Image 1 (cartoon, rainbow, N blue to C red):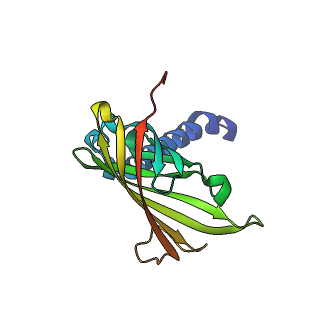
Image 2: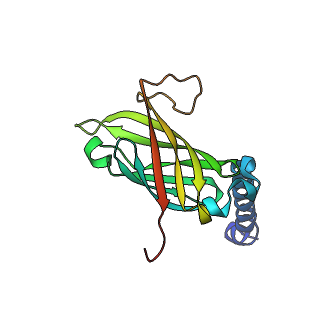
Image 3: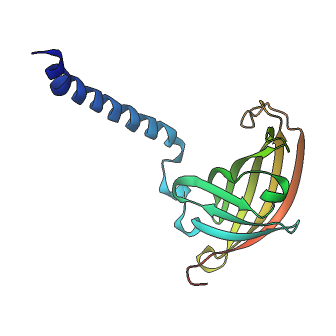
Length: 169
């Protein structure tokens, strides 16, 4: 058997199987703390039009499996990115979430990383409304916002209310 034949008949299938197993194990490890669908009630999943106490409006999306996205009306004025993060159920109609975004200086360099922690209460039929509080912690470039020992440069808090975006509204 020559080397090309060996690659096609034995090596490629073995590498494919190894890659599949590695990816399966990695995905399982990444979601091990989210093993139960009860952690992510369907009632919570969706997009909400949110107004913060400051007057800022945003779109908050609670995705299946705990994925969270926020797009804010203040992004352009304050030069920061969309927020991405995670959420999970914290009570019968409560959830907690954490998102991260990047802010930039006028020259395009990284100004800081913001970590936004939210406490959400879902209300109404089909979890049509949300309200709660949020805390934004700003970390200098190079500081890990996920390290509990990291100290933020600044912290601000606010409240919010919102309602579910429905198709056809």
